[in-house]
Length: 230
Image (cartoon, rainbow, N blue to C red; front, side):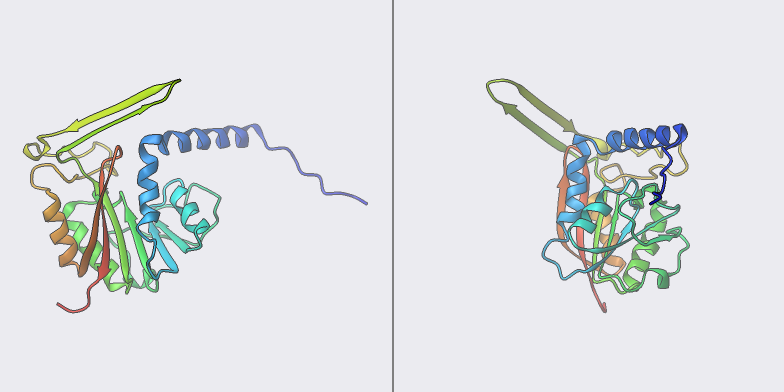
């Protein structure tokens, strides 16, 4: 009986896979991995089945949510640059999308994304998330306010330590990245304290129920619930 012959991958396909693998390891570093874990961790214990993940990038959080049993859909400007897990995807611009395109999700996960938009666009985007009917919202944005961290690991064979000190950013103005899609602002700099960001979130109709910080990938997370009425 004849068998199907599977052609070996071409050199360009092998090179492309190697490039994607290098990019994956470079991005999901030991420094950043706790940040990815926090995104999924904040959903624990909530009555959530369907999740809209905004800005999935290389798909690690998508895979975590999928593996944890959530029905996850991704949203970004472009098609996702990963093949696994294969999940529904919405191509949309956060500054112009119609609310109806994201209706019906129990929770929206929008991490390390809104700082790529001008500050004045963040309120309208958060309001659209609220108008979608989602019950929960998980947000994170970079935080560069005062921070002090020190960790030490020691055993009979090896040792390592890490020390980080961030200070006085509140006196400095954030310089927007040269890349048009780069960061337009970060919390902790002059004019962008955490409290101002939290007021913006609340003005969009959300009630903040939890605040969490990650380190050494320095961000502030907020778990929010939909607030109906004034």
